Length: 101
Image (cartoon, rainbow, N blue to C red; front, side):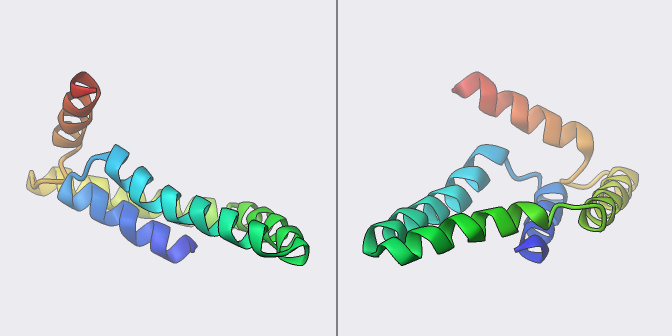
């Protein structure tokens, strides 16, 4: 989970992907899986709640500094080479996305 999120975040910085599609394409399957598991049985409903809580615990004092350091390093490298992940280009892409609705 955390590793996949770090890879997707890194690709977002390097490829200047917009945030909105990433959220839709990752959150919708998670919510659909949650609803499906919760509707199948009462026992699964309790496990689903535990799984979401366990996922929240992973963003603790070890994971956050590693992911932030990775993001800062990737952003600095992209800015130095002026590539598609340049922070200015990412900001412009997000501004266009917000303006288009």
